[in-house]
Length: 147
Image 1 (cartoon, rainbow, N blue to C red):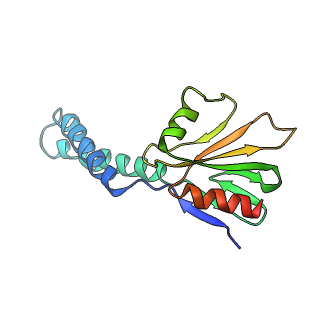
Image 2 (cartoon, rainbow, N blue to C red):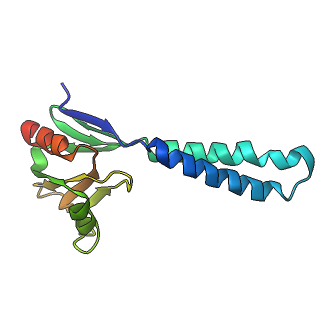
Image 3 (cartoon, helix red, strand yellow):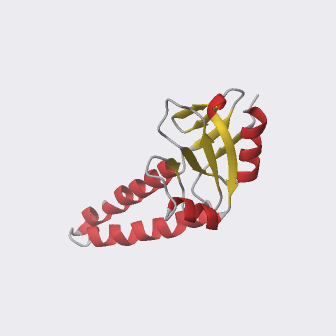
């Protein structure tokens, strides 16, 4: 039984300008080669851009019955003291001037919301996690309900 699952995929509107910039870069690279060799840069560069965007958007967040999973990181729910949903301004403050260098952060700039997960583990020096979320209230609720 999962309490919450989401993927922080890159939105379609970010793919369009990224691929356009990749096409311009490929055109610049292709200018140095004459004939068909000049076109080789397009599939290479555009493939690299697409793979990069896919990798940026592969982060999966999940709350199970006993763990909070963020990509490869695992947090036993018994160590969750608080789960606080953050709006864009509070997220910016927590990641900027009020940041703790020991915090664990998974942040995606195209996702405005986040959740601060305060830890209660005497053996861990990490004070909290800040995790981007498109549905921060749902994620915080799932962490509080299960944890």
